[in-house]
Image 1 (cartoon, rainbow, N blue to C red):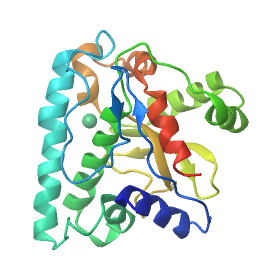
Image 2: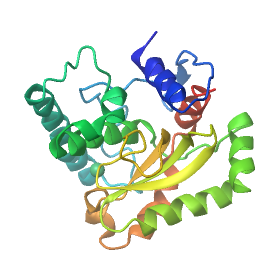
Image 3: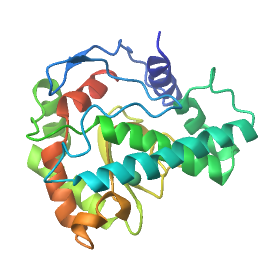
Image 4: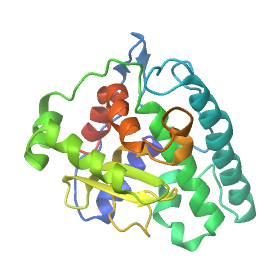
Length: 243
Ligand SMILES: [Fe+2]
């Protein structure tokens, strides 16, 4: 059993929702390669695409600085904090750490969130054109939000309205339903201090470092263009893993 499934089981157990955790099945990515739904550990994984692969929607320089400077910094600082605060990264999963983040320092909170959020973010994008959700997952979106377009509007509004730096999220909440929320800074819905808790399926980084070089103050344009990049197979795979 992978730590990914353990984490999901823990979340479901914590929320009182008995369910069946399934193995992360491989899926076919844009390049036609079989890729696992990769678990997030304490290291940065290599990007599955080139820095310029998301152009014209996200430019190569933004991607390179974002991945090699900002995100790499969170990963390094997370590992430093784990040493300082006696977290055994061989036995404690990231999601388990996030679920008890209130017991740790602000440095741990910011960097554990920063690392997890970015590893999810990279995997949830692919070079355009994006597919759209299908099957059971699409039906669940329509049941929860009315239509896929309505879902996109609510999610986009959550991203636009997050004051300052933070993230917008699509989650499976403690009622086992799809929900949209946002978090400040590098917090996320897995944290015990989160206002809205759940298992994140998709997250959008609305820190200025994610878009400022290309979009400057036009966050709304960044958000509307980002929809072209969402890897819905990846998101759907995470949704299925909660069932
Ligand atoms: Fe970021």
